[in-house]
Image (cartoon, rainbow, N blue to C red; front, side, top):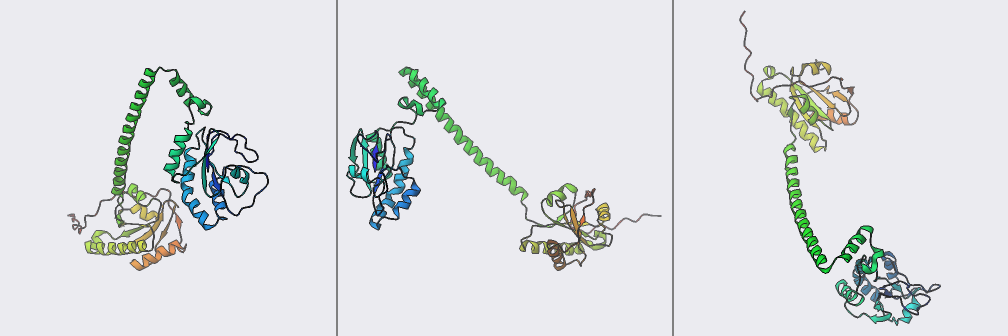
Length: 358
């Protein structure tokens, strides 16, 4: 490979007429083709060329290729240094012969019209040091390369050019302090962002309760609980008719159906309501046949279906399976369907009703 910072003098038919080239000379069983030309090969073509080389040649090429590619990228925008490669087994045989390339891979540096053999380490750091010490790479935007500057960079460069040494030193210190302050602000903002991210996870966790059977207490919570999914609502007998033990037995059936749906991979909400607490809704949904009554409802689709089987874990699970397969008759939701506010059950038997004296 040759690193160079000026055009080669006197080269014909294959000379790279660009300022600053580093080329990797390679050899193998390829065939010469037409007029010789110097190729700055891209990584993909380079990998394709490796396949024709004997193993003893391929291995050292493969070992240095990542570092050489990194070197190429490092100086890609440098105006006076170019890193490139020559195919000495193909179109660049003439050029490689003029520079006495005999083994592969060969690294050469061309500076001020002189070709220098590079015999140092093939690591990125070693090759980079050699380029920096011999070719003196300039920034892409500099006093010598103003044409490579963007409009904004050129304005800054020319502003600095007009400053006195003292003024420039003062400006340098000013900008260095700004950089230091900006880095501190960035670090503080990073810490703040990290803290906010932790708080966000806690806020989310506060609403990620373990899925359980919920009591239907108001319309807002009902719709939030069922947003984006199907919900099962069981209308259970009044506590005066069923007592706490009967209520708990019915809730146990619902919980068993919930756990079965989770095992099946379904995301279904389960709620219950005391019979009579949602009288208008029960009338609208046609649940006058008695309690317990079970429905499946989906607000997003605007449909509901009524369970016509017995009240058991197996039958409710079968109802949901049939629902998912389109086997349950569905009806549109009543347009004014709304849950009324209800009192939360305290888990106890209700006190007997007070008898009025005649």
